[in-house]
Image (cartoon, rainbow, N blue to C red; front, side, top):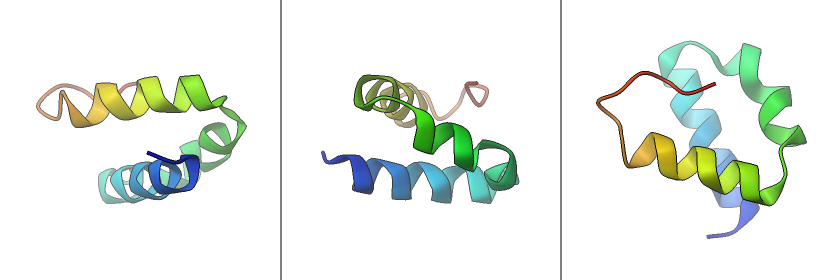
Length: 52
């Protein structure tokens, strides 16, 4: 999965949770590896708390 697609999906996720404004800059500053880890943690564990 490419970086832009992960960013878009994570932004949508945080926006739905009401946290987009807080995390948008942090997401863009993450390395590809950090972004991928966060993506996997969120979308494989949707029943758990929002990571960060």
